[in-house]
Image 1 (spheres, rainbow, N blue to C red):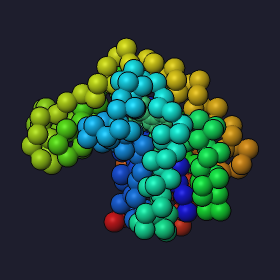
Image 2: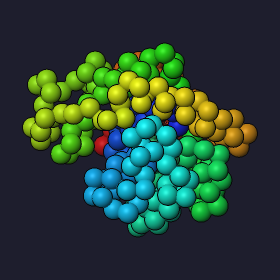
Image 3: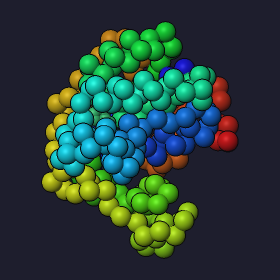
Amino acid sequence: MRIILFGAPGSGKGTQGDILGKRTGFPRISTGDLLRLAVRERTPLGLRAEAAMAEGRLVSDEIVEGLVRDRIAAADCRAGYILDGFPRTVVQAEALAAMDGARPEIVIGIEVDPEVLVERLSGRRVCPSCQAVYNLSAQPPARPGVCDGCGAALVQRPDDAAEVVRTRIAVYLRETAPLKDYYRRKSVYRPVDARGTIDEIARAIALVLDPKTAGRTPA
Ligand code: AMP
């Protein structure tokens, strides 16, 4: 089973991916996280990706496809995996089908009003040490500016700055939004309304995936 979390930057894919990962036992694979790690570690791939990420543009299909191909070959992906932030273009979707086409897939479309995205992204704070993600309004840390988990000082992702966010949303609308029709045509697209609390959205996703077990307490 492959679950693709599809939605604009700021739609809550990462948060929902973590919840879903705990619930299903499937690893969440975020191409954004893999790329940020490569940039932090100054690997050759990270150095190639860095400028596009800083400007809010897409990294080349070839780079992200390679990352995903290697990651889904790992043993922990055998039963299933959750993709967050990939595919982002029709070319990437076709590459995914070519690398792992036989696996059944479902695409959870987290549908959010574009108007709220800038506000949501500008309120996001991340922990540079353990990578935990917060939101100043929806999911604030217990102590302002401090990570609940490890106590490090929270920071804003450089690409969450207002001018970069505008580019990211424009790129999403131009390059990624057309994928919705691509997956609708394959009859695997399931929309979920992103209004509501994190728990409400998690329940809506669980219901879409498995109406029989949606009420079960997450593991
Ligand atoms: P995210 O954490 O998913 O918002 O991704 C952060 C940045 O990483 C994006 O703005 C892109 O520059 C890059 N990125 C992540 N996933 C992809 C992808 N599938 N294709 C191209 N670029 C990506």
